Image (cartoon, rainbow, N blue to C red; front, side, top):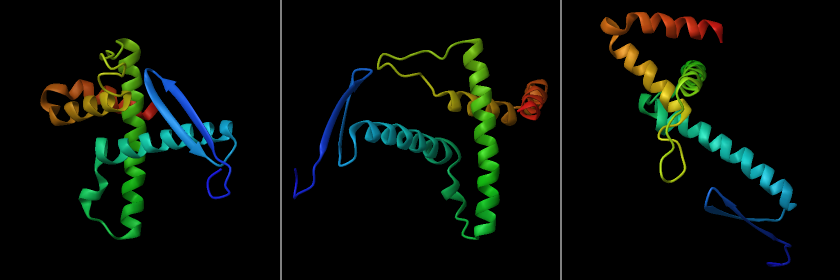
Length: 136
């Protein structure tokens, strides 16, 4: 108990890394909440710093921000699906620390970016990417 509050300490070892949680919730509920929160944090990282950097637009009109996030959401889904396809054809290498060399999202985003930046040479690939998007 800390200041009259009953706390639970949870310790896990995941892929060689330790995770410690302190909660006043039921331990299993805390683990589920943490898993869900971590997925959300990972998504935000992909949408923001590891992906599209929407803050760099300096938009402040709510309608424009809403439209931007609609486009970013489509781009994220497209990138992830392309990354899944790449990973299914050739597994993304696992580095010594046990994580992928690049995330599935990043692999897909890199493929789309490379194709768009080299349209003269990659027009056929661009058409394939567009066709893939229309199927999802």
